Length: 435
Image (cartoon, rainbow, N blue to C red; front, side, top):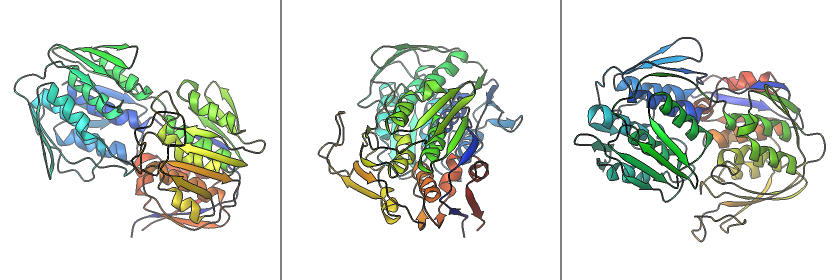
């Protein structure tokens, strides 16, 4: 029987919680270490399942990973001994990013189908189209993807239909060692993308970020090792902030960086929450009554889709009506059914309840939510569907009266390091029941 959480709510959370390194940054940097045969040292690496799965990917193809402390790892891939990462203990969406480094180092790659959270379509075709334009042959099979290249990849114009983070990362990893110039149009611009670019520059790459979501890459012959510190996790920071708001508490989120949370901080203030930016973090608190707002998720610098779930739980405690329009992941509001079971007043719509252009318009996806509050939440049994929705359900259980049991918490282990320990540090009544 798998582990479960038992959470008793109704207590305002107060104290300090520290954010770890960004999960969505560290995993891509571990993959990027395959681009060189020299040492790559990464610091502030989070130790959760996502990191372990990505570490397994690079070790499988011949790299070594030596931990030199709790959060610092030395990676080295002097040679690629296998081009296949199909036989992994778990699947995640990171494996597709290994294709470009393996093509550079071995001329071929075998990766499993994309796994990870089931929150919407993960358009692997964007990755495949980019690699194909750069000279690779990619075959999709029931077992995954088999890619080959004759000689070097070559530069190309990559015009993305949507500013996909993963597809932008694939084009970056492919372009840095490709022959000639690669231009990525409609590229993603998230902080984790910029951090990956800075790492690749440290390794010897030539990359220019232009206006209008355009990135220019001039391929080089060889990359070398580097030292890099992973940025703090802005998703984790916003999750802990939402806990403070939803439970009517006050939490100092140590390590939260203002520059990565500008849009989120605006939303906090709009609903009547308060924050205080300090040198080493941000204090979040709910002093007065929260109020409803209109909110739309978007690509960076918009309101991040990964912030939406924990923040929506806080909106169930706000007076009035809130409207949430999800424009990034079409299946990301499914977790609200669990909130309704707890007493939340949430209604989903297929209409686009917002002003931002939305690719889900008239496609029958329930991607808009109307939230009426405040509502009294009561404890119940909860099944964790994915990382971010799982954290939202943890917050809901902390807000609710009574004791909730959460199953499938392996999703939370994949995204958060020492979660129950951090929660206990701010007064949460949470217990892991070993299976």
